[in-house]
Image 1 (cartoon, helix red, strand yellow):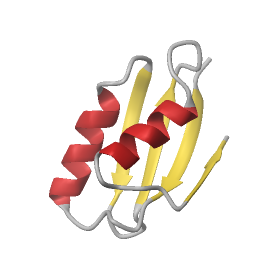
Image 2 (cartoon, one colour; image 1 turned 90 degrees about the horizontal axis):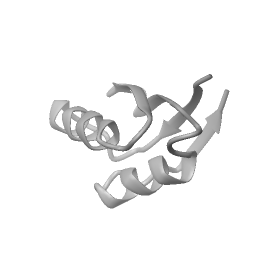
Image 3 (cartoon, helix red, strand yellow; image 1 turned 30 degrees about the vertical axis):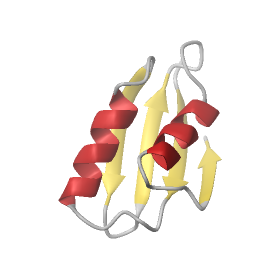
Image 4 (cartoon, one colour; image 1 turned 120 degrees about the horizontal axis):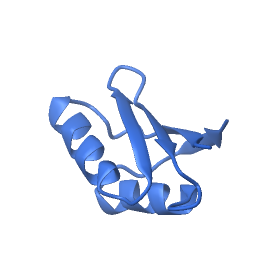
Length: 74
């Protein structure tokens, strides 16, 4: 069963940001879907908790230059 995490990163500002985040988060094991909403600066990720976790997702975002300022899980 998959889990979801919803992340806000104020540094998301353009299509390049969206493409980078979708690509880099999508490379993590167990990622099922990544959706980036530029206007709300929100990243929604569905993932398999047996293969990755929220900390790995948050770390990857930070490593790519989009540090999260808030997040929650479903």
